[in-house]
Every structure is written in C-alpha cells, then in structure tokens.
Length: 488
Image (tube, rainbow, N blue to C red; front, side, top):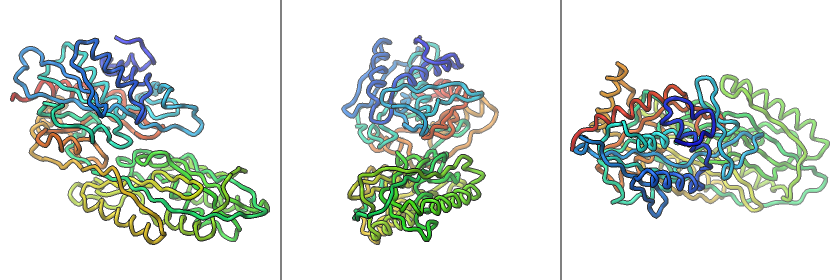
C-alpha cells in the first residue's frame, strides 16, 4: 500500500502497522500537524472517501456502510493527530522537521531517543485501516481526527455541532489493553509569574547545575508512580541543602510540557570560585541522598555542576527567597485518591515547566481532577501561594471531565464482545488523564462513548513504547465491536 519507511511496517496486523509506519515518517508534534493532516486528506481523497476539514483544522472522513449493515447506528472512530515532542538530552532531533525513528525491541516498538507517538498514532492508524479495508463489516462510519490534543485540546474545543452525525463514538486514546474507559479527569492550566529584581555582584563566577536522567512520563497516568519531578528536586536542593556558602541564583528552568513530568532541570548560579569545592561536596551529598530515596524508581538520576555564562545578573536575596519558597511549597503529584473508584487518582498537580527571563520566572502547572471541587481546591492553594509571594496567577484552558455513564449501551456491548472473544471480562475504568470525550459531550450530549486501545507504556517520555501483540488484540476488538453495533 505504501513505500515502507521502517521495519515496523512488516509487523502484524499490517493493516495498522503500515499506516503507523507512514505516520512516524511525517513530523507531527502538537501545533505542527498540518503536513500529516494533509497527507491523510490526500489519501482519503484518493480512496474516493468523503473528506473535509473544519475551521479549527480537524479532519472528518465518511465511509458508507457495508452491504446489509445500512440500518446500524452510525459510529465515529476518533483519534488525535498530534504527538508529544520529548527527547533525551543527547538526542539531536527537531520534531518539526525530523521523522520519528521507530524500531522493534523484543516484544515492543519504541523510538530512538524520542517519544514514539504511539499516543495516539496507533489509534489514528487503526481508524485509517478501517477506512482502507474492504473486508470489515460495519455500519455508517465517520472518522474524526482532532488537532493539538496534547498541548491544549484545541481541536476538541473547536468541534461544532453539525459536523458529526454518529450515535456512538469510539475513542482510541487509551493505553492499556484489557481496560475500557468510561470516564476521565478534567483539567486546567495554571501560569504563576513572579517578578524578580537583580543585583550586580563582583568577584563571582557563573556555574550551571544540571539534574538529569529522571524517567519523566505522562502527568496523568504516571502521576501515581512516584516518579520524581526534576523542578521540585532542584528547588529542594537550592532551598534546603546548600548551607554556609555565599551563592546567588541567576535563573532556573526545567521541563518542556505542562502535561509531562519533567525529567531535567537546570539552575544558573553566581558563586565565588573559592567556594566551588564546598558546593560540589554538598551537591554530591544531595545526589547520594536522592539515589537512596528514589532507588527503586529513578535509577539514572545524575547531578552535576560546570562553568557557565549568563547575561543576567543574580537575583537579590528577597527575589531568590520568594522564588524558592514558591516552588518548594507548590503542591505536586497526587493530591487525593478517589473515594468512589478504587486505585484511581482523583486530583493531582504537575509542576511541569519553569522558565526564567530577565524580569520574571514563570511556573506552568497542570491541575487534573475527576471532580470540579477537587480542581478548585488545588487552584485555590495556588492562588494562596501566589498571594503570599506577590506572584501573579492565570488559569486557562479549563476542560471538563467525562462523567461515567454506567448505563452506556456501547460499554455493555464492548464488555460482552470482549468476553466472547477472550473468555473474561475487561476492566471498566476511569482514567486520570484528559481524554477529549468530555469536550465532545458539549456539542453532542447524547453521543454514547467509550475509549480503548493497546498497551502503551511511558507516553510523553522518550521511553514510550507499544506492546506489539496488544496491537493485534486491539485490532481484533475494533473489528468485533464494529460488527456488533446495534440497529437504529
């Protein structure tokens, strides 16, 4: 069907892997999806399918029912086009123009030094594979591919009434085979900006502290795993573990996405060269402490210091004190577990990105919660911290959760189909992550929805990988549920 790009195109089921192979070859990080969207539009047009894009940039494709299935309820297959751009520090890769380099690693497919984009590329490939097939029974079919899900859910926010006519939506953005998702957390972005004042200091050298080697991961599905947050650890060292040394903070930065647990953080400091050896000893002691604390989770943690240069003067004592207090006091990780759903996080916060400029330091956080009151509780704490330190806080991009519907017809159909195939029931779950289903409910309140997918580990990090055999299981489930959609 396509010219092979990598070895993964030979995996089974080829119907999915060949499409995913092509997806990997076309750069598509969040906010840079147009080349891939246009590729899909051109392919759909060549297949004689009805394809269009809305003003937001979402892609819609329609396919008529197969013979004898015309009276079935219409189904929307849904995925998002963009991927999270994360890479290892030693990997030279520009996500806007360089293709992903997937390869087979035993039972898994992963990528060389970058995120793979199986989130949500495998789901997108499966939608296209259904459109391409002539041997899969199905009723009236629509495919919805949204843009910019990972960086702001722009496509889902922009979805309007009238573009879809389906009764049932199958979201393909879940990441554990054997689980069906019937609900998800909502969220809101928080930007905290603290103005800083600077002072020139004589007889000081500039050094950079680097904290690297953390695992990172998805700030929703991985938030309960105990993975360390590089921003929080570095601020902890500067606030509580540097003693008896005359040092001054110039800048601090870490993380690159508000929805990814930060793997790396950096601080530029001014320090008399005569104090360097003493500072290094305290940094080494803190590294030893962290390796003991986190030995079962963060096995590659590394702290280092080297000479650096900066055009900025150090912060004065008041600004430095307020900033480190703000970062240290900021909640991070699991705030509360759900009382209603065992083992599911109710509310969390991720201190995702810290950036420094000449005049201020900005902290970007993502708050998630299954309930509005949980989200409001955490944002209230952030407002209090901002007030105490004289910082400004802005909340934006709030999106609703997807309220579970235990009476969902498609949920029960999927459960029964799954049990017929495998002889066991799937786990019915609510996910602590932001699926687009909650936003789809606004223009299409009566649409019946579930989410499912293959097993994808460590999304939003360069360790991302998808288990090969679960892609085949997921494909089997997709075909079976399309064959069992009820009549109108």
